[in-house]
Structure formats: structure tokens, C-alpha cells
Image (cartoon, rainbow, N blue to C red; front, side, top):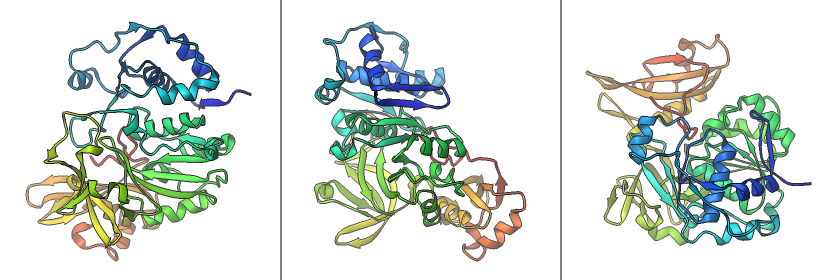
Amino acid sequence: MDKIFYSDIRSGKSLTYRQLIEDIQNKTTYSPYCKSSDFYVVFQNIIQSLFLEKEIVLLDSDFTDAEVKNLVGEVDITKSEPVALEKQITEDDFLELLNCKTGTWLITLFTSGTTGLPKKVSHTFASIARQVKKSDRHIDDVWGFAYNPTHIAGLQVLFQALVNRNSLIRLFGLDSSEIVNEINSKGITHISATPTFYRLLLPPIGTCPTVKRLTSGGEIFDEHTLQQLASLFPNAKLTNVYASSEAGTLLASKGNEFVIKEDIKDKVCIKENELLIHRSLLGQSTSFNIDGEWYHTGDLIEVSCQDPFTFHFISRKNEMINVGGYKVNPTEVEKYLRECLGVLDASVYAKVNRIMGSVILCDVVRENDRVTEKFIREQLQAKLQEFKIPRVIKFVEQLNVTRTGKILRK
């Protein structure tokens, strides 16, 4: 039986590796720009570009015409050229061809743009697939695809699946019951997602015993969420990763404490509690703000141990909120909100105030309408200083997220 490459319950698509190869083989045109809401079309175009050794530029499907113009200029992104692959691709030589056609290939993407205009970043196969592992023990892995395919995290899952000829099952954009059903019915063994995605599945509505590995990145994972996930995924181990559109995946840990490995020890440094990485680890971009040889990530950390050098992330530098001269970490406030009885998830953000500088607001997803603002405030008062407690608590059905699936702090 042909192995499934991609399955999408919403569109009804279930496509094998044989179909993928045939579709790429039969393509007679190539466009350097890809803007599509169909994940399979995005995957197909990426792989075609790799085989042709041509650069491809990925654009989010919800980019407006004005955004596209700002990002790539006055170009016709629908324009294509006639092409043909040099040889017939068989399933047997698919992986060999995939691994050989990497020399001059570039893939260009854009950061999520949560702090302004998205930045353009280009990667080679080596930099985008830095942490991809090819091994016989990965042959039977089945990946839950929980990311936008036009961003770094989704691309890393794609290549991890491709080099081991694994199946990809779309989970991105599904509701919690659909996600759990897909995991169990398709026998998903590996999921890589943001903590925001995992919190969609809480409180657990069942168990997913087939999942062996959870990978999390993009946000801080609080202990309360970790404990709840253990009952949903009883057989899974969790790995936290530190990755960015600028550098790909750099660090991994079993919890929130990251240890700098020897091979990149001289390529990481700390300045005023901010993590800096050496320019040699970055992709290619004209938008990087390089300080000598170092790139400022904007991630604030706290050192736990000097030998081996160990740290944990505190917040994004630009997300700290100034309340009357006090610095408030929204991630800390969200952590305590999620620990409140009846709170499923929360997003903390700032509103400009002429007197205080900023005031803190939050959106809260609650279990039911018996969970009141007064009830939440009473619980927070035992855990947080008064200036850290949100001035306004708004109840919502779901939180707003970025294009990359992280909490959007508006």
C-alpha cells in the first residue's frame, strides 16, 4: 500500500508519496512565489523548487495585496516560467534526490510581524533543516502538522517528515475534538506545536496513547499546562525547542531550562539579560540588526547555572509592560491566570495610559459563566502584586493568535 504523505480532514484530501511525486513530475511551470491556503500546494511547490534548485518565496495566504507589495515590491507573484524535471522520479530515488538537490537552493519566508512589518529571511537547506534527524527508528513516525507551512516551524516539520518518508496529518485550524479524533484515528506519534495550540486541548477530553513525542516552541511552557498535558498524552515525552525565523532551531531541552551545547557555546552570549546569537547562525537578510558580530534576539533570559551554562526564558524584551515605573512580565501574569480555577487560557496585553504609562488588560477563556471577574481577582490577589493584576478582565470564546499560532498580545 502506498504510504500517505498528507491528510487533511477539512478538505477531504489524502495523498500518497506516489501522488506527490507524480504531481511534481507533471508540473510544467514554476513560480518563484507561493501564496496559497492549500497546504498541499505549498508543500508541492517547495519540493519542486528544491528539485529544480530554484529559490522560492513563501507568502502567507492572508497577506493583503498591500502587504505583498510592501514585502516584495512591484512584482507579479502569479507569473510563472515553463520547466521540466531532468529525469523521471521514482519512489526509490525520491529521498536521494531530495538530499542531493540542496546546493544552491534558497527558501525565503517572512517573520510573523508581531512587532511591526515582517522581516524577509532566506535559508539554505542546511540552515533550515539544522535539527532534522534521518534514522531508521523514525521510519514509522506519523506527524501531526500544527503549524502554518509558510513559517520556519512548519517547514522544519515538513523536512523532518520528508527525509524519513513520514506521513503529515493536518491539525492546524481544527477544533479540539477534531484534533483528538485525528490523533487517535490516524495513529499520530509526533506533534510539534506552540503552547497555545496545546492549551486548546485542555482540559483533556480523552487520551491520545499513540503520541510518543511532543515538541513545543515559540512561547514559554508553564508547569500547570505541562501537568494537564500528561493525562492527555500519557505515553509522550516533551521537548522544548528554541527556534526563530532568523536562525532556525538552535536549542532543545526536556523542560524550561536550556543548556548551551559545546558546539555553539562560542556563538551565544548574554548582554543585559538578552540572548544574543552569532551572525554565522543566521539565515540571509538585509533586515537584521547586527551589533558587530552579534544579533539581538529580543529574548530576555535568567541564568540558572554557570557550569554548565543553563538558563530559562523570561519574556520578549518588547513585551514587558511599564505600569507606573514598574516592569510587568505578561507571561508571568498569564501563568497565574491559568492557575486560577475555571480559567482555561489567558492573554495579557497593555493599553497606553497617560498617567500610568500603561495599564494591564487581559482576555480570558473560562470553563463556564460561573467563573466571574471577582472570583479571578480574589485568586490573583494571593499570588501577584496589585500593580500586576489586570485592570480589565474580558471573557472571550477563544484567544487571538498570530499567523504562527502564538498568542497575539494586541
